[in-house]
Length: 79
Image 1 (tube, rainbow, N blue to C red):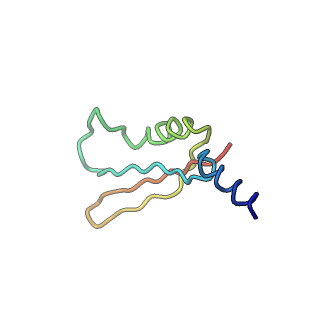
Image 2: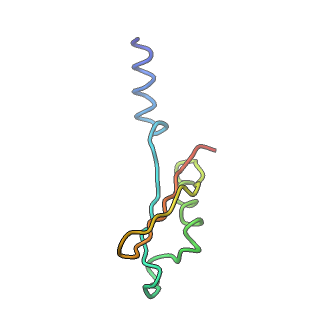
Image 3: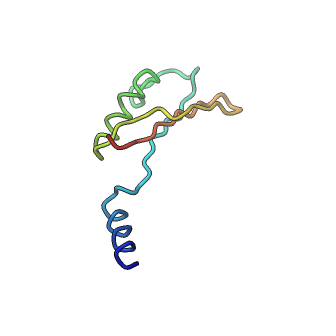
């Protein structure tokens, strides 16, 4: 039992057991800005963020709220 707890503790500290997700919120009809990537570049930005942890980005889902705000979610998965 001690070994199982030790392995779990080490995985938690190493970051291997962490859930990583990148989320973009945007308004489709809003004017574009230079500080926020356009929706066409979300995949590249998500890949760049996940690469920091040695993972790849997979598109999870998108949703639209009542105020026409879109939530684009990307999940980091091991290679």
